[in-house]
Structure formats: C-alpha cells, structure tokens
Amino acid sequence: MDNNQNKQQGQFQMELPQDVAQGEYANFAIITHSSSDFILDFARMLPGVPKPMVKSRVILAPEHAKRLLMALQENILRYENEFGKIQIPNQEPRTVAPFSINKGEA
Image 1: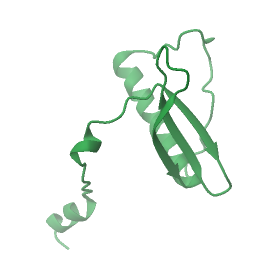
Image 2: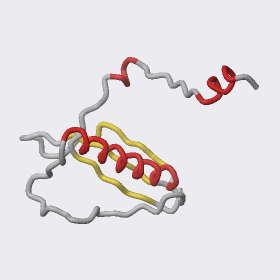
Image 3: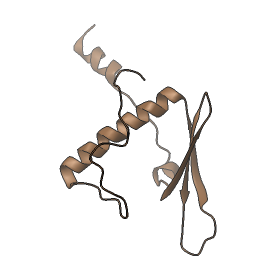
C-alpha cells in the first residue's frame, strides 16, 4: 500500500448540515443513565422563564460517554494552558480533579 492510500484511510470526513452548524446555546445540562445508555439533555435557562427548555438531547453508549469525558478533560486542559484557568463562580477551588480517568478502559 502506498503512502497516499495510508493517508486516505486515516482521514475522517463528516457532513455538517447548515441548520446544525449554527449550534444551540445551552447553559444547563442534566445527565441521566441506565445500564445501557447515558442521556445528556442540554437546556437553556433564561431570566423570567419558569422552566429551562431542553434544546438538544444526546444519547450515548457507556463507552462513548467515557470517551467524551476523556476528550472534554483533555480539551479543558489544553484550553486552560492557552487561556488560563476557567473560574467557576461560587465554587470552592479544588486541588484535585473531581474525577480520575484510568486510560484504556473505554
């Protein structure tokens, strides 16, 4: 197999429809799970609105949920290295991450 074929096999292409590309703003999330799925509901809480409106629901297999956790942790570390520590108002500073990940389990 030549080098060009190796590059083609390693590439990943994904389609992003225009209506999805705009994204949805969410400032609240609820995570629930069963033995087979993790369900992430992303909602928008606004002043004067009595209930948050769920804008998007993502359902993941447990293995994919763990991969998402690892990817988020890695990207938050990269972000903080570039832009500084993310401060969460009204929260005690932590000296240890709120979770630990054993690599290679997912």
